[in-house]
Image (cartoon, rainbow, N blue to C red):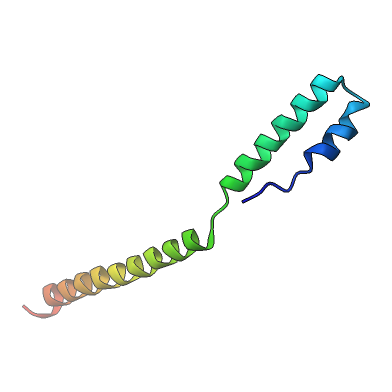
Amino acid sequence: METILDTLKLYEDLKGAFTDEQAHKLSDVLKEVEKSRIDALATKADIARIEGQITLLRWMLGFVLAVNVSIALKIFFMH
């Protein structure tokens, strides 16, 4: 995914307040920060995989709960 930060415009904006080298370096740093932020976003595939795992966990939890309830019923009501 491409970054949406316009580094040239940022550089031009910063040139008045900083030296050329400082403005260039700061725009590079901000570009890297934005890139790392975008890289950390979840994709649709990530979300779909997590939803699948949640569905599986719900089924497993339901099964474990049903087994425990059946054991408890057998212990208390089937002497």
